[in-house]
Amino acid sequence: MKEVLVVSSVSIFVVLFWSGCKKAKEEVSKDTEEYTQRTKESSEDLLIHPGIGVGKIKFGMTVQQMKDILGKPDVADTGISYMYTSLGIEIVARDKVVTYIYCGNPHGKKSPVLKALEEACKFKTAEGIGIGSTEAHVVEAFGQPTRRKDNQLLYMDKRICFFLADDKVIGIWLRK
Image 1 (cartoon, helix red, strand yellow):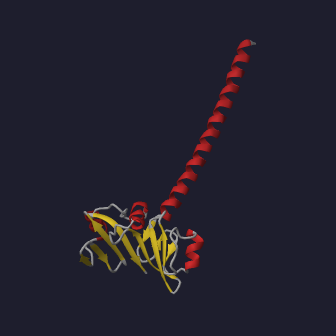
Image 2: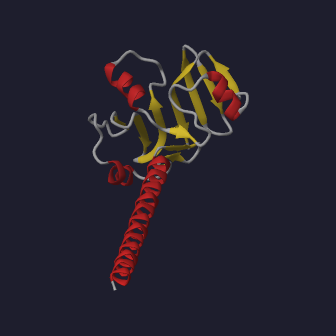
Image 3: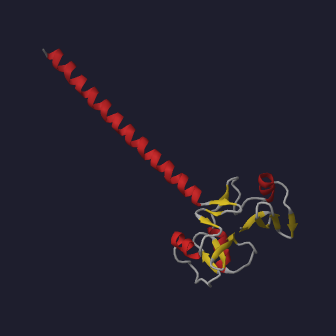
């Protein structure tokens, strides 16, 4: 009788333990899927799409649509220029439509606001090119530029320009 009781107790323990492990495994799996989705969404939010825009901001959208997504600019807007220093971008609008996007500090100015843009910019192309990438990495990813001028690598067909200082990308300019 004792053997039956011990076997039954062990069997119950194994079933409870196994079901608890299975439940824990399902919870970890669910958490992993949610994390993967959030990571994918946040990395897509930081993706530069040459000729299209950055993240959820697309060329051709209205200033109001842009503000609905990003909120109020960090620096007082001028009606043409909208700076989001926390994101490291400046968005330029013509006729209240997003026309240009600057990431980082394209002109290498010493202004504290522009240096803050350079430091904050986390946007990257699908090829992984962003602030801090070397000229060699840009050329490897995009090929030879259409035009080189001073510290600029211009890719006219992709509508993107990389600005360099000390062989590192410090700014990126995009246009529609």
